[in-house]
Image (cartoon, rainbow, N blue to C red; front, side):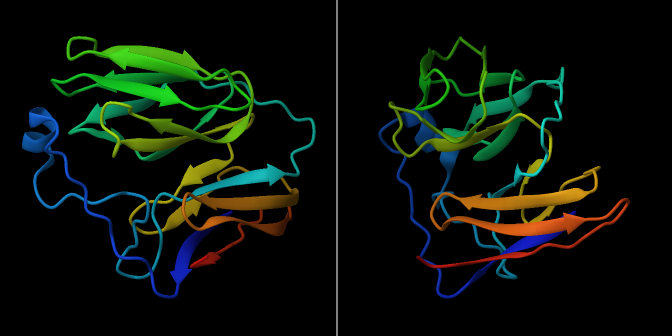
Length: 209
């Protein structure tokens, strides 16, 4: 299953970010710097949309990958801004900046955490033991820093990029509810029926709320 996520209508103007409260951030950020709340591509597609199978997989179990998901603190931003991972998979949190950061995960289903990382603390890890879409992350030191983590029990998810595209690979035949989540425009779902070895195109179109 593949598709693209579009935005239709007049999008809000990008929000500029001032990083001058921290000299390291001000030097790293450059000008201009904008919020990643809404990243609208030139062809009206949306980046940073979390697309995932919400229902239809039944009792099938999928082991967590051995590879870690990387969340970096780089140039006083969380990179990537939206990321997906599986239950039990390792979230590897990096601090590439020469300043203090923290990662405050305001989980509601999983156990929340608040990790401080000095400029010499370069790696910390965490895992989540239950599915949760989405978990907001915030830096309490630099309030413009935010990100979101989607945690699922299966691997059928992807975050749209500069093409607005996504692909959910190797999905078995079945009837599914597929969801697309955006931090400003909300969530929408579509029902999708897949035959054996079928590749189906499913697009989502968000409008301003």
